[in-house]
Length: 303
Image 1 (cartoon, helix red, strand yellow):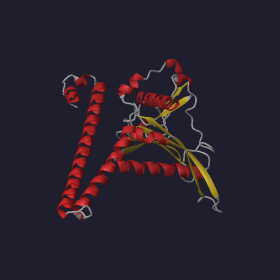
Image 2 (image 1 turned 180 degrees about the horizontal axis):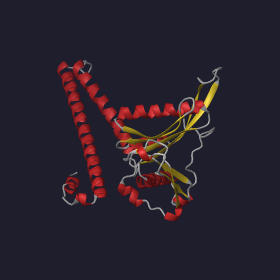
Image 3 (image 1 turned 60 degrees about the horizontal axis):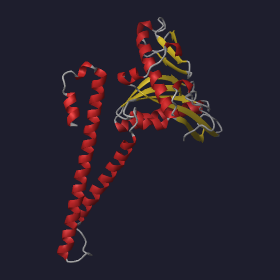
Image 4 (image 1 turned 90 degrees about the horizontal axis):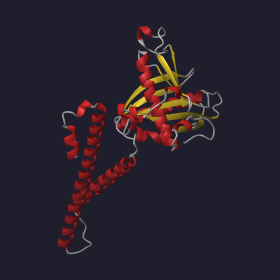
């Protein structure tokens, strides 16, 4: 921590913003781990003192069968429960050691097989993730949302901004299944619905620069934006679609008001998706990957 503090206090650190952000993030992580270790030390100390007091009371009472002071026993129980919860959180945190786990996440939800029920299921998943983000203090920003004809939504894309958001959410990647009595059918028959969830890290500038793409591997096309974009919407081709030819991965970006900004953000998301695919498949050659597309149908669900 002292070395990182010294590095962070150097006047020339912010000459390289990407390096500066990495140093500050590493410093924050080191301080957090140090604070956790000190918390464990304090809790163990409190528990040891309580045990000593209980042993001393038993010696004064003259027998091992003497009951301890209820207040001391309650304090010891509370301390042990707090220590157990803290250890459980630390164990989960220790698992988030991946290269991109500490970054924010971009989540895509698509309605699959099941018609209106699948679209409703996709919206239920969106609400579930929103509640989870609120509970953890993560900021959730909707990037794109396509409503269903009757209910629910066809697709939604949102960013989850928070430390270790990608690490927590990456296990949600896959197909989700819901079996219930359909509220959209008169006879209320049993209906199985599917929705696909994709999770990719939101790469910072430094991480984006480390992922290199050949111009020959990209197909870039422009189109008119269909969303809120001011006076240029539906007049100027500000939306950008980028396809990575070797893998078939396609990214569309239209939330910015200029074509250049959409292209820059689209390239960053394409690189993030390639990183996520490479991590999932454990492949050495990203150009050979074809398995990133998720089929929202029978036999593909993760829950």
